Length: 313
Image 1 (tube, rainbow, N blue to C red):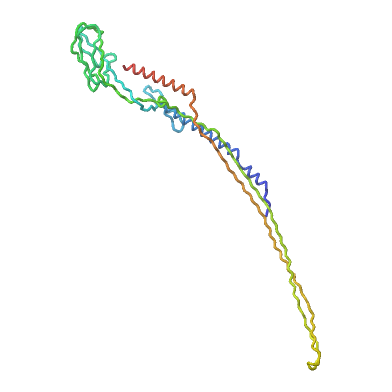
Image 2 (cartoon, rainbow, N blue to C red):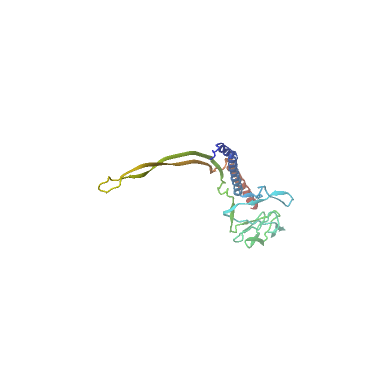
């Protein structure tokens, strides 16, 4: 049996791409961390209530052209309905027609800031403001809005500066309230790989042994051969001498020898390889700057909402 070349073990171990293997594992963990970060950023954008539409493959924002032929980023309202707003849009009378000090009409279709309102339960009280006396009017409701105002008494002494105010009317409007997840107290979670262990192990085992056993045994077999001869005389039997007998002995010896031979050659060779990657994903708190930015955004949204309500009242 040919001897094993121990140099082959070194060549085989040298052929294992340890560096490439560790590099590939490390790059894979880095790519996983990047995907986690992108997912967290995307969730934070959705929870803000105003998300940007992006290309699914590249992540680039999608644009559209507005009425002024200007490109703008496409956005989606990602707020959710939570709770209700109870409110009523109050009506505001328009132009007041005055002729010779007498009120002739109160418009609900023309004039500065005219508004028919909504969700009235019953007609509001019409108050006429300005100099003059005696004028009265009544609001006419159609489907909860002030559709028109009927002058029941024109009064006297009124001028073009006369104004009309609508008071009461009951009724409220309950509408679902939209709120972002951040306004409801939720914050996006960020995750991070920690305690990452990369372990690569290769075990080479080589065993070679030669066992030789030889046993000899000698066996001797002996055979003897005899040659007989006779001598005697004639005469009566009671007188004559007895016959005499003699023989020559020859022996032959055969020796045999057995040999038990046992030759054993043993050889074992094994290469074992294993690799292990162990890591842990843990949530990390959002950055303090992000929380501060969320608070500023919520305060700004609240201020804009108050301005909008004030403009409509």
